[in-house]
Length: 327
Image 1 (tube, rainbow, N blue to C red):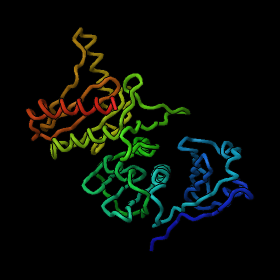
Image 2 (cartoon, one colour):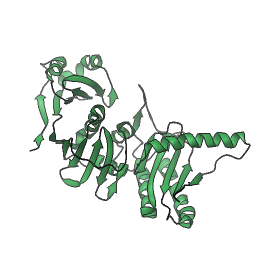
Image 3 (spheres, helix red, strand yellow):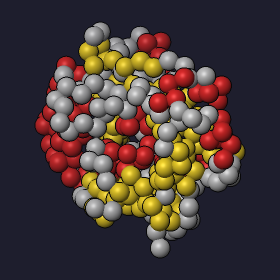
Image 4 (cartoon, one colour):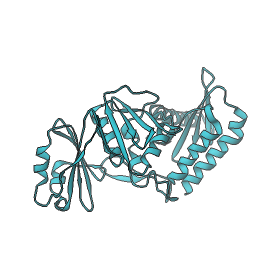
């Protein structure tokens, strides 16, 4: 039987110290601390504090204990049990703890059982939302209105792709999945102690809604011929969108593109154009579109109609991406 596991452990922190609350936690789970201006997530493994985040940014215990604003806050505990239910508003923290603990679990949205995320040993291995899959499905689930989700630990899960938490955490930043905002900026991605908006040209920010639409348009045009695709940042290979996403492949193609540019330069050849393609041993085709600060890689099945791809699909994909950049 499932149990709802987000329980108010302390309703008012005015008369109880935060340190006293933390000393009471003996289980595995997440303590959420709320104030008017901040949200802290504290991750525990059998009572041991293993990670702290404040407003999505890593923090230390001394930092949160010194913040006086918690005096007006509340505390919430999410117990990490074999089977439990909690709110989708905690999805980011659930995936983070699963990554930290290398847990295997299945997450299902209670009001829409076609919305699922599977995690194997801390790595997202499957995601679906109605007819969507992969990172597109994760975006859809993140964008859902707050509802209840069911988590089952140590169950059999499916493996359709591999996406680690760090490569998808940008989805959970404010406005990253907003379906209502026409001008949603690209979410901030944490690198070290600072955050900066993804930029492709000076003073231009990615319109995430249009970026998602560009990926969806590519899928609609190619159908089953599109095996996978990823859009990543040049220089670091950070994936920001995709279908059946392959972050390791994106990182390798990022390196290969850089080596290809160097080879062309040393040979005295002209530089890369708007894209290059590779015909693979089994007849599949890899296409890598080139933009100023991004690359868009596509893996296509052997039966892909190349005339349609070269004359219609690629020009449209380039146009859709540039429109997302321009907002």
